[in-house]
Image (tube, rainbow, N blue to C red; front, side, top):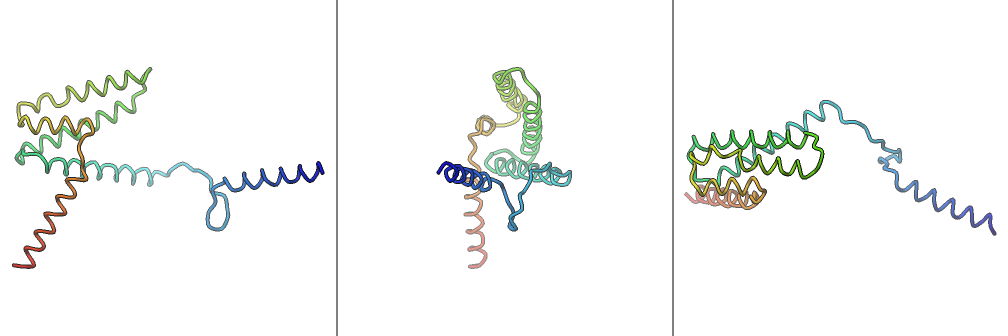
Length: 155
């Protein structure tokens, strides 16, 4: 009876261990590996493209002219690069990193205040704090595109 009980427990444990391993289609276990240089470069490129798309969508909500938008784009790019550098910098404590990020958010756009309107500056501050809803902008763009297509097809 004891042997049967031990065999049953061993079988149960081995099935659990076996089921938790990641396997491919053929049942071979998949091992974790380091990403290659190509994969890292591709991911970096995708992140940069996504960042530019996000900034472009944000700029479409501002009332600024072309020149102001170019300057704002440069400031936003440098802000995100500086923020990324802060995340990569080792800090003693978590609150020190948070303080540094808050300081960056407060001071990075100071020189823009004289160039752009107060409403646009508020929008930039909201976007920096993460309150910009890109989905709404994308929906508006799609609506405008549909209206334009409908107008072109009718006319």
